[in-house]
Image (cartoon, rainbow, N blue to C red; front, side):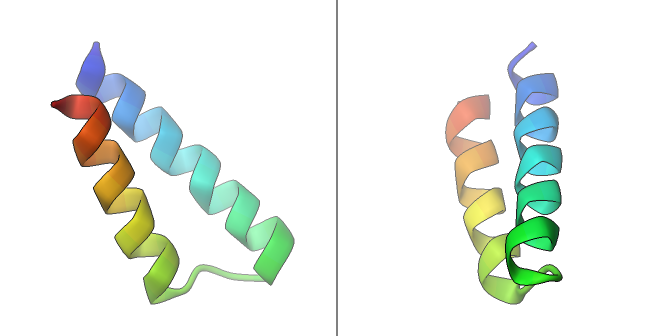
Amino acid sequence: MAVATGVVVGGIFIVLSKRIFGGVTGDIFGATNEIARMIAL
């Protein structure tokens, strides 16, 4: 369940970053990784 939640949050971050910034940057990948890891733990 926690891993699936991490994947969903990652998808939400990607959609939001595309909408707000017009694309996905390395900072977004890093933040998504950290948040998904925190949720999975």
